[in-house]
Every structure is written in structure tokens, then in C-alpha cells.
Image 1 (spheres, one colour):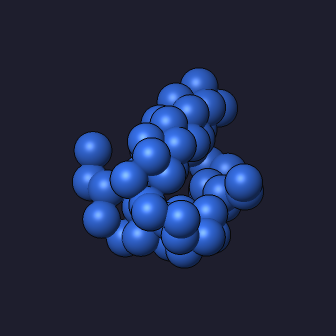
Image 2 (cartoon, rainbow, N blue to C red; image 1 turned 60 degrees about the vertical axis):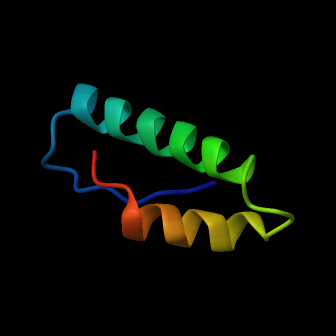
Length: 50
């Protein structure tokens, strides 16, 4: 799974963000009812605000 993030954001914040996004996608996969991982990632990026 790959995410893009701006380079001018401090590295520690980048790592926190990426870890949170991976966790969000993994959580969403448990409720995806067999949906493709890329589709779940797309919807997670669209709707996860925190």
C-alpha cells in the first residue's frame, strides 16, 4: 500500500499520518465484504477525517 505525502511536512508527522492511514485501511478491510483493497483505500482516503 502506497500513499503520497508532501515533503515539507516534518518526517515524524509524515510517519504518524502514514501509520494512521494504514490502520484505517486495515480496519475498513474488516467491513469491506470482499471489496478490493485498492477500492477500500480509495474510500478510506475520501472519508476518513481524523
